Length: 446
Image 1 (cartoon, rainbow, N blue to C red):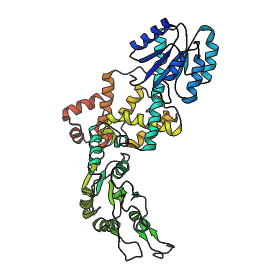
Image 2: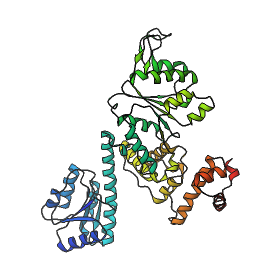
Image 3: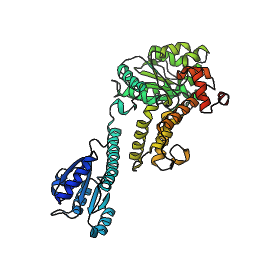
Image 4: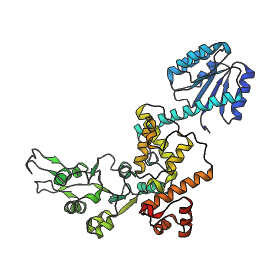
């Protein structure tokens, strides 16, 4: 349950100490018992992976003195005080100065274990936040950048590492919010180009009349208002990576100019006749099929074939739902670290809602909900609203997930039952039976 976390138990009464130690061991907890606070204090250090349970009245250093000493080097380490009847007022005061909780003697094994489990959960989350802060500051491996244990994500991580140092251009496909720019950054950061610039351009966000100036650069006087030379974004990415997001939105007139750069690997600033060589790795991202667009003459086929060398397909979140718990916990911990708040605990009912949601906004939507959850403003979206309902059975959870999945695919394919049948790998008759079971009518999705 709390692998790697310890419970330090400080109790001078051997009978109470042995009984408490036994109760915690039976609960599956890793416990280390001491008869004095001095001995326990010697094994403690900042970031100690566990909690402390200490009697208040001890020979030598008291439980209160131990609390003060611990808080001096790790204010977040939970300390539970064990008090006699006459010490309750003192224990309440100690809680105001940093104690996690207190237990009054005599106590039952259930009381002791219950308080300790809550403290361990608090400690686990605190340590995870600290670990995440270090990862955010220090970087980390590709597993910490592209999260997920699904087969699709493991394949993508492996492919990125395989091709990161290749000079060939890369095309990334994925719906909005699936993390295409993160993949592009990983291609850059895990390559020999990482010491140089990663330059990103959203092709749909730069007006056509200034695109050439922004991307290729210009000389002084090249046009009205060009008061000085400007280095373009491609040149700025020299020896690094040039990322073109939403490349399908690039006008045809600009596609031919970009194609020349990709073929020749040099640029000419506006107002200049001098060819400037550039060594860039081009990564393009699209949410629409470029081959289909080229067949419709909405995208240059020669540019498509120039980009279509190494292709990465990012699946939508609804197709890798097994990654949702890990992603959500990661985003909650990241938000808690960013806003300096304690990470809230998601209930099983809330997680069921997250797993059943359609996620039209993909990972970006999940991150938004996680941040709102940490800030305490998540109730409005309904997914994480508090629920007093009795826990659902496994069959009910499976039915809920199945219904949500069929409903989502009916929406994706505008109620086309044949397409949904193929996507889900279900015979039509079985699909119709399930649709009837869940009161889903194909016509309502058209």
